[in-house]
Image (tube, rainbow, N blue to C red; front, side, top):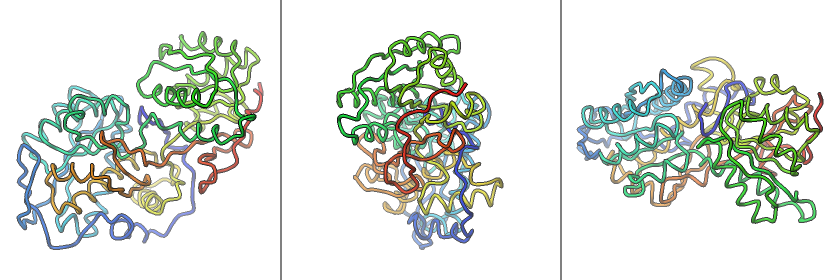
Length: 440
């Protein structure tokens, strides 16, 4: 799971298996990212990350640093599977511009220092043709600066924190492109739903407790700004240490204010569980309770808080295996065929990584080569691209505000984790507008 979009591997919605033949159409059809044509480009990339067309059939080498060990190892390994799955699909369909794609991954051990060293090696020594990003905003920020120095387009899927886009290097070179939903936009569907309610039915007060975390806080702060503009009064807004011992005090303070909405900047299950327990002890139940992370953790969440208490809890996400997108469905079923398990075992890391490959492939095809300066210009041209996560359209700093965004809610007494927003979207269930009372 990614720090800026926490997802667990078992929380995904199962779907009936699609014909495996759909996977073969992934590149040739809906992705429009592969080519079996005879045109090719020279693999001798310079330190500026630019190559020229020469008719060479040498492989296109894509360099990436991933956390194969360390704190982010589960996510890094999932990203590697996503990158490899994409490359396999491309190569089965003739490669890119008639050239085979090779993925070269160096292990950064989840270290911001090592990730910089790795990309310097990939660019200065290995002279890779293209660059894919690492896992997490923590590692994407410093590594994107290295990519800028060497002139590479840095397409990534797990670096959505605002700080990534506001680095001096990206402000100057505009070389970062995040294919995933910006984390600050995660709760926009929730706010839009509030706005859609008749004025007399909108909640009047809200609280915004936030753990001190660069990934959990931006979506809460964005929601606060938007809700205040709708006339929802803020009765509490504070950042507390991201430590279990620090959770009870702010939770009690929120309960004492009794707001109708609680928007919690949480990083994990313990954060949410501590607030829920404190609220129950104070005999306070918010009308609406949405958390940045935690309720998406499936059995780990319901076992910690109880299914009855989970009922009505909400959480945003940017992708899930049940996403009604043909590309996504084909990828999920191909992943299961290759790695085993079920659709519910495919987490967002895989989709984020696969989407990186798709976007880069479309840019290479459109620019007819691996000249990174041309790729950067193309990705900033306002074109809308397609991916397993939905549409991709970059703004001037490389954020994808066209990305799909969903809100999920525990329903049926905490037994079902359902998509509820956007309203009317394929797969969305009717939202529970008033959270059921605590059950224990």
